[in-house]
Length: 336
Image (cartoon, rainbow, N blue to C red; front, side):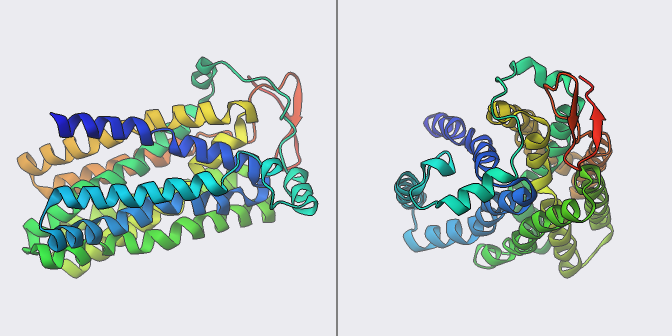
């Protein structure tokens, strides 16, 4: 019970992290650089997942005590907290190393809504873009938690990997995602700069990528060798991470800056249901129907996410009274 209580407390502590990250990006990054800026922040998910197996297994083998493993990981976290407290500021105006030229470049490409008051929390559910975007992000977390919680177990049960080999085998599915999470930000920014069309840079980019993600997981049950399966897991996870920046960019696109933090948190709260359902449903499917059913379910979730992302209207910003200039520079009637 004590371990479970600490894990719940840990969840409460880490919960605001991504919402605060998105608020920070809204404050710091020019509009046309948000994708890559978000990719850098979101890289932590992929790098953390990549290092989980080797760090955990390595420390466990080194100390021969799971308690020492957690203590060492906690020490590393305390060091990270000290570095964060030393160098982080909420806005570029507060940072002593940001000069006037850099500040002007940041503010020149920001949304003109900094004075707009914060919207009520329930307005989130009146905006179809935010709701479908949160449902789309559910897929990203679902794939992530399937691979984190059941990927190593699946490889161990199916191909008899022992603990000494599992530490590096379990890293492989995350290797590609570490690159694509950054590449996806670059692609999204390039599409927006080249075509000036948010639906292309958000909807179409995400939908095509998620369709390919679903295809990868759909094919896994038909493969027989570990090389084929690990390759598809790696490719599917890499594609899943490619559009991770889109979900967070959309919140900034349609939300007044004063509400970005709150609405980012609500997006994460909805999507985080996957962190509960993915391990539980995958375990039940694996036990009663085999691992193939687990991967079929993952493919279905990715496909549903693809459908959700086609329904976004990222060019329509919340809170406009009459009309607005969209991010592509085209006049749109505000629809509330």
